[in-house]
Image 1 (cartoon, helix red, strand yellow):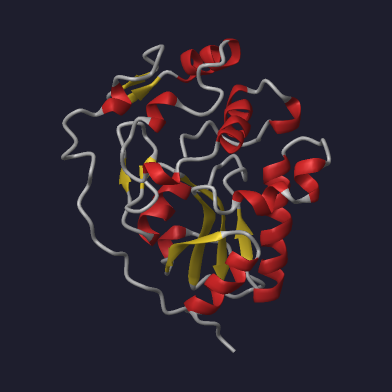
Image 2 (tube, one colour; image 1 turned 135 degrees about the vertical axis):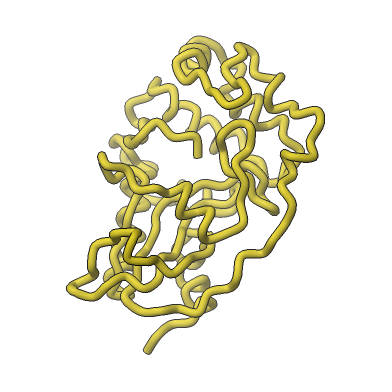
Length: 235
């Protein structure tokens, strides 16, 4: 029996993940077959704000002291769902070559690239991320992406470009090494990126200090327990 999109939402949310839309891939996407069957639907899965965080922090992976806890938790949870749904999971940490998660995300929902390079969402602003994509060998009826205007285009102040304490954020550029070096040596950004927190869109969904600190430590590579593997990404 082919599940509905609402059925999938309930199942994924029960597992601690937010459904971030989906789309029907074309042959040009070159997705691998699923047990000899072509992928017909790709569902995007992630975190939104801090609502998924408690599920992860109550997991064995978060507490076991081993490396890459969030990657390992995501793979355990999504791989189990993939088996149940006869699908195939893909992860941002797969690669190289890396899967085009930001392109996939923009096909699944109406999102815009902010001046920070992070995708901005109508409800959650800059406070969302992608943990996996699940390909299914059946066609699921999907809700059409809701149109909305790009808030960055009408934002004259653009505080995200002026609040970074070391000027690592510039129009069309991000000084990764400058940012990482600063985060490693000061506590200014221990509760999250200052530039990111300056954006007013979805500010009420900003990560809690504990969640933000986890991500900043992973980005800086200052704690082997909380170092996430994968490409140098902004999302």
